Image (cartoon, rainbow, N blue to C red; front, side, top):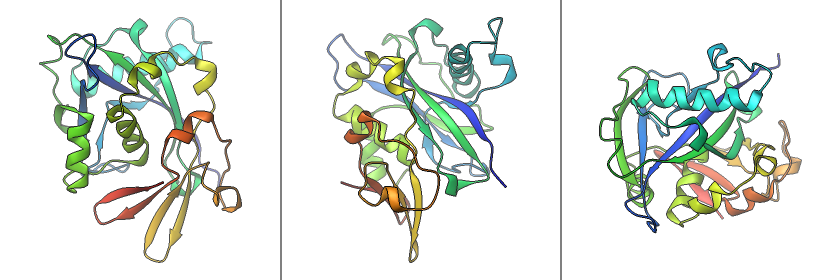
Length: 233
């Protein structure tokens, strides 16, 4: 049986400390341990696109995703972001090997002033332990196996730590519409998440995607090692 792919939206909320801040804070949440999808993982606010996100211009798919992004920020983190300041910078599709839950997730980036966001808090149901921290700080916790980061989240944090976020604001929708679609590869007792630019990707079973140019900046695969995903270059 083919698993339906559900639309979803995720938001990276940055709080720069000044106009030239290369290491702004971002808000992240730990998913509930009871969640059926990515339990206990540290993630950005986000979730499924719902019927209520369609609005008066129901024909506009792009606006539905953006409205879902804004709504999820409010529901999961009590963070209000401006709809017209959300910049769609990436798209990921869940591998077919991860059924029964698959998502077509658009990632948005937005910034808020340094004096805002202090009231942000996890909803206590789907998420908990909300925190403001730099990408470098979150990555330090990941290296120490204190937090679990899904491959898309880890890829984005690595890019943020490298100072790429201003470039992402300038991306056009045409350049991010094609999703990054990894594949799942079990090897012995470990799991590999294989990215489209990995040399073995095309020959592996599962839904196959294209190789968007933006994916070349990410690791070619991720291997589950202990309590974290480890990137392979």
